[in-house]
Each structure stands twice: as structure tokens, then as C-alpha cells.
Image (cartoon, rainbow, N blue to C red; front, side, top):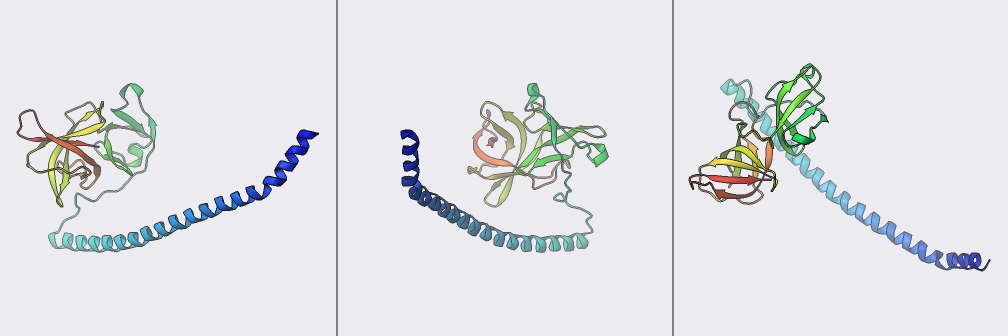
Length: 221
């Protein structure tokens, strides 16, 4: 009886404190939502501006294509949405299987991307499924032409390797003697006709001379 009475008195005494605490928590949550909403509105306004600029660039590109009698460009491609359905633990960095195949228009050598950038290319298709060779694959013969952004221009190199222990991609064959800033974007160039141009590959982590001192190696996150 004493315990029950004591708990009842405790609840009555602390009820106002709990009420005030709840109201303060609600206020802080509303304030946070307000700030996030304000930030999102600014991003939406910027998105509309970028969209208008992109639409104008598309119109200019279409006009140039008509003048030059071009049917397509290296930056044009359509997306087929797919989901990874299989991944071998023993070859985790090499291949994955997705749930789209030739029935859905998937073909060999097509580029595979996520919302964060390039992940690999199609190497084998069946009617309903396809196998992807990842850019972290052990096969060093699978080279991809990429461009590294430096001072508003692209420095060309070849993506051909992955360092598992330090978790970065390796670009070789960079002949220009420039300084690569950390965070610079790396994109596909479209050379070779396999990958479209402009697909994000990663960002620069650092660079060093190769073993002969003739070219540079660039590490990519």
C-alpha cells in the first residue's frame, strides 16, 4: 500500500515536469522540421533553375545535331530499372546477377549504374536475368576510358584495377603533369563506344607517379 501510494504521489508531482518536457521536445522537433523545410524549398528553387538550364541545353544540342546531321551523341542513353538477385560471397567484388534479361532489352556490354554512379557492365544475358562484371573485378584486362576533372577540363586515363585492402579504384596512363585535387570528379569519356560519356565513376583520393616515373596513377573513391 505504501509503495502504491508513493508511486501515485510521484506521478502527480512529476506530471507538470513531464508535460513541460514533452512540449519542449515537440517544439524542438517543429523547429527542426521548419529548418529542413526551408532548406528543401531552397533546393527545389535551385532544381527548377537547373531544369530550365538543362532544357535550354537540350534544345541547343538538338539544333546542333540537326545542323551537323547527327543521329545521337555519347551522352544519350535510356535506363532499365533492375534489382540484384544474386551475389557470390567468394567473388563478392567480381560479379552480380540482376533480374532483367534479353526479354527486357538488356544486351552485353551495356553500362550498369546506381544513383551514385557506374558499377559495371553486362557480360552475359539470359531471357530473364543478366550477369554484371563490376568495376572492382579482378580482371585487369577490362579497361574503361575515364576523365578526371581538373580546372574545368577532363584529363584522360584508364580505369584498370581495384585495391581491396585500401578500398579504392586505380586509374593508370595519365600522361599530363597536373595536380589532382582531392574530391575531383571522375566520369566516363565515352571513348571505345562501350560506355556513354558523363557517367560518374567516383572522386579523387590522391595521385602518385608510376614505377617508371613516366605517367601518374590516380586513386579513386
